[in-house]
Amino acid sequence: MRATLIYGAGDVRVEEVPDPTVREPTDAVVRVLRACVCGSDLWPYGSMAAQGHGDRIGHEFLGVVEDTGPRVNGLKRGDVVVAPFVWADNTCDFCREGLHTSCRHGGFWGADGVDGGQGEAVRVPQAEGTLVRLPVGEDSELLPSLLTLSDVFPTGHHCAVTAGVDARTTVTVIGDGAVGLCAVLAAARLGAERIILMGRHRDRTDLGRDFGATDVVPERGAEGVERVRELTGGDGTHTVLECVGLEPAIDTAFGVVRSGGTVSRVGAPQYPTVRMDFSLFFRNITLTGGVAPARAYIEELLPDILEGRVRPGRVFDRAVGLDGVPAGYRAMADREALKVMIDPSR
Image: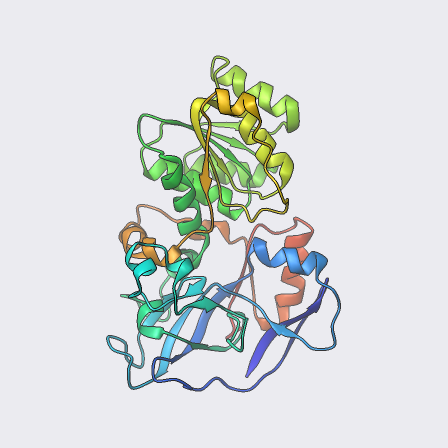
């Protein structure tokens, strides 16, 4: 079969790899219907040292079950399923606490001999605990939105939940990428009436308005902080959802949060320390967030997609076949595409 491999910064290739098979009794093999490129995939794409072999890549996919091991219950050949961006048994103590990213028997796609999601098929470890069956057909028009359940929609939701967003809170979302836009959607879904989106790409912030943003602030740095404070009577917002992962973004978050408020970060941090000095301590600012346990949220978010109340799949603004994956990476890295969806059948 064909799959995507990364050899180093800017070097993504689609090559022939061995077909996946059931190796463990808890495995399943899933034929991929849709996958996508994540913003976090751009970090190795931009900085990975060149190497002589390619590594499998991709952690967001949905597909059709083709085979299962003898210890996989509740799934059968032909089921349409979505996979969260880490695999987990869904039974250990951490999973029972909703922290599937710390599963004692789980792991990451594209690591330690496990397939990446950007290919024609994937061997899924701990399949019964990892995969969530979807009540749709292979040709459902909902596939793009259902694909977001693998990562970006639960990540935006996690950011809003850990920040404590509800109808009584005002919200600033930093970042107009796919996660930031899903954080806007999540905040609106949780009832927030005032959502300020900090982003400067008009096509993206327009989608953010459709998702529920009430205000858009294109300014950055001190100018952006000043603008948010102007919009909030000088106070800032109760919650800030930081969806970028760069140091200027977390500094901006601290600049726009209201005293007694909460900053939640889900952008993969590209900085070693967080500057939380006495001024933030004195203002009783809480910092929370972290990697989203997507598996814990899928059943909660799924009905709103199935019933048409939310359409997070609108974050996909480009679709490619496997041959188009290298160009898809370039387009996202060059900010020519918001989020690229992959259809291996194209």
